[in-house]
Length: 160
Image 1: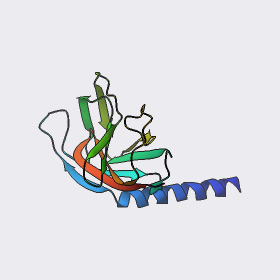
Image 2: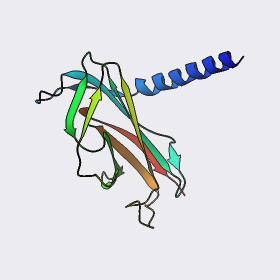
Image 3: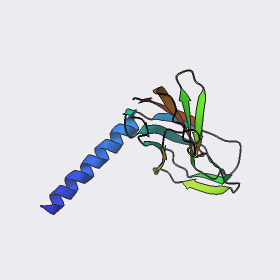
């Protein structure tokens, strides 16, 4: 019985991931450096909900899949593999997450057929250490990754 439940949960999880990935964008990744080979990357940004009440934690996730046949390698890339820019309905940038970027550089590798998921939470404050909550309304998050120049966007709403 436990094996059947585990199997059903595993299949459900795979179906959810497949559904999310079907709405992701595909980007042809090329670069002029010798550390990255040409590859095809699928990128998708999601939120854990469509709308949020005041001060409710918002979770953004960036899903990146290497659909190519070669490993994507980034040498001395930025400190975080994913970055999230929140913009209001007028396309004005509200904040970028993570807010603080260390001065160090990192190396990244995404083998063929691999998927990487990075997430960050946001408390609806700008900056996050502030006591001021941003205005209610429609926003969108733009996610980008060290693995591709392609970006992905997702709309969400802050309600009262």
